[in-house]
Image 1 (cartoon, rainbow, N blue to C red):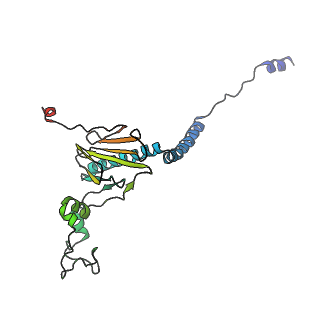
Image 2 (spheres, helix red, strand yellow; image 1 turned 90 degrees about the vertical axis):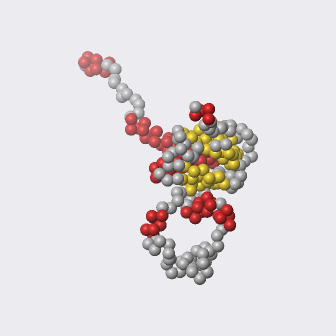
Image 3 (spheres, rainbow, N blue to C red; image 1 turned 120 degrees about the vertical axis):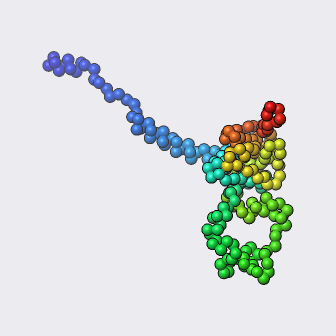
Length: 235
């Protein structure tokens, strides 16, 4: 009896509380999934977040264009339509060797029934070649772009977000279409794109600056500049 009383007098060892590593990782995973679903919803609801999201999308295409240009050793371009608030990636010109493989006749003939956009057969000898587009004839670069280069579908800016301008070197474009080439050497493609809220003021602007030499993206609230080399810098 005294021994039993002595054992009952000893303090009982309690189980240590806390979470295991697996439980903590599971909670973190659930929180990550919730955040990934909430952030896009915030971007679509709050105008300033839509502006920031648009800037990130433009920056992503800048990085993709240079990465593809360096990786494939071909020239890619980004086209900005400032008036339509759209932008897209222009693919490199087609390799003549690839065209030769697809057309063993070297363009001298075409399958029966194949026609061009005017409705004439491609090998129509009687009527001659189709008329040349006047705009393309005046701008050989545009003719090459339209005839030899394919492009991805244009991506529009979010609602209430518009382009301010596109700056390449000392030239700033506020209207029309702007083509920014990215060299396979990694030297081309440096430019600045300004975005703003359509009904906002100067404070509701974001400028995306891409430096092709350092392959870096910078975000500015005010219009930045692109530093160009002068003769004094070369001495």
